[in-house]
Amino acid sequence: MKMKLSFRWYGDTDPVSLKYISQIPGMRSIVSAVYDVKPGEVWPEEALKAMKEQCESNGLVFDVVESIPVHEDIKLGKPDADRLLDVYCENIRRCAKYGVKCVTYNFMPVFDWTRTQLDKEAKDGSTSLVMYWEQMKGLDPLKDDIHLPGLDSSYTQEEVRELISAYGEIGEEGLWKNLERFLKKVIPVAEECGVRMAIHPDDPPYPIFGLPRIITCEENLDRMLSIVDSPANSLCLCTGSLGCAESNDVPKMVEKYAKADRIAFMHIRNVKILEDGSFEERAHLSSCGSLDIYKIVKALADNDFDGYVRPDHGRMIWGETGKPGYGLFDRALGAAYINGLFEACEKEKESN
Ligand code: DNO
Image 1 (cartoon, rainbow, N blue to C red):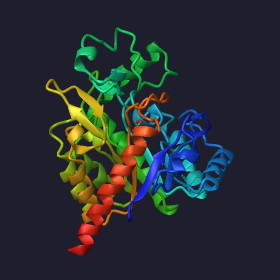
Image 2 (cartoon, rainbow, N blue to C red):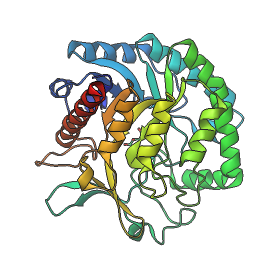
Image 3 (tube, protein in one colour):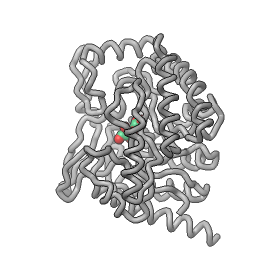
């Protein structure tokens, strides 16, 4: 198969072992990061080297990083942004030195992904991550203490409030300006060292707590990609994130950006959008959620996609415990399903 199948692994503290990951049919690449260094600091080379060697000794390749986090001061355009951008570029160079070809990041203010519950039980007894408006209602981030799971827990509540006010002041256009500055600095470095930068869409792709969100829809993805027109400035197209907004036609977006060779990395998962716009993460199978995963894979195969693909968030099934969304079993089922779809779509294409 042309696409490169990958799996996220959180390093030595991850309850899922590299050995088990390597037993998933077709598994090739490990997606990881140096997770114990704060945003804005340089990653120790020894950590990258150790990760590379550990993966190799399990027959896997460590060539995708998720994520090098972007410091809030870069997103806010604070005075130390220039210094932090230099650190960012140094981290890209270091990753490249140890074989990394794709670096994922996001430009979401304050919160990475937003969910209200991480272990919502379905009828079959499996659990998954959900975002219910009902559970968000009434939360005022400027008054209440917010303890949502996608929030970096190293922030105090006071710091969260300050950050939210600061983003309120710069607004969407301010965030675009700072993204532009980021891309113009970082993409040439990525080009130089053979790395594709892959921006992750905002999850979910609409404003939460009034914070500006810009990586949300086709129009904005076009705008982002046109800031630096280079394959090094690409997308991590996360079907489940973009797919939480009914207005996003995900298969169409995949088709368009795969054709233009602007997808470096695919996160494939399904979501079910509920009547009030809330959503539940579901099993990968098309019939389990709102997204047609077959159409998405077909769009990739039809365009000879040879980038990285990972089965994104799985449910917790078969009694497994661990990091919500990142257990072994359901993500392995997702991988098998994705393999099947790719094999069928690629062979169908060849025979035509
Ligand atoms: C959630 C992930 C995100 C993603 C970052 C990329 O499970 O998809 O946390 O890694 O947004 O920077």
